[in-house]
Length: 358
Image (tube, rainbow, N blue to C red; front, side, top):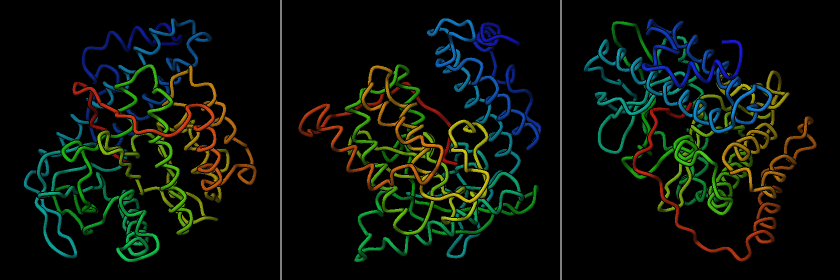
């Protein structure tokens, strides 16, 4: 597969997810699958269709199919693991939580039902324990700072709620686990990755506007509390289409300003700013928000796309803060669309994904 056209044909001709991503044989297979996804995405990305000798519609179809097959591969991989650890239980600091059905698959963990209103984020390997510890530290910091009665209580609905932390003991060793409030399709939430797949041509700018404003508002609060999220990508942002709610998930790569991120998401390597290999600050989240904006909007939304491009300054000190962006974005929306009005947003019932927050 040396050309975009050949790659697209291979993707569209694949019958099973294993045709692209190979057999399920542990963590090495997961790394291989992520690497394959990253390489093939670059070859059939609609933005590169012309230079790769591809019709744009064919490129888009291949790009979407590639992601769908990756979701199927991850789900099958998790199912294999789930069978191996049947009837597993999270032993937490506050209680025990039997694992139920697989809910979703993330980059380093699997998400399982863990009782009414709860999900358990379970590391797939012992080596992923530091990622779970990062989630716990971040959510404990944010939870105490946004408790009822505090000045930052307004931020709490935009954050996952940590219920407990512990581990799962099974035949493959001890695996770190985090128990969270359930924010899933069962409770009305979907990820922006699901939104992107459901709206292949991109979002109307008026629909994206309420999502973007709430993401920015959450980032303002997070930055004021001294944290950098570190992975503002589509699978880490959950929205409630009916209530226009937003939850910023995926805290396994969060850090303090002046420190490096503990890890990056391999499949989103092109969405990180240049400074990601060293010390980072809130500007990293601003850059990733802008890249997310470019990915979510339809090509005709020229004003908003120019706005996003203006955030992609190579030097972090040249990028606007999330707070400044919020004000500038509100001004842009008023100039572009007029007075703000509530705009209903619906998701097709036939589109889903097993991808979980990182």
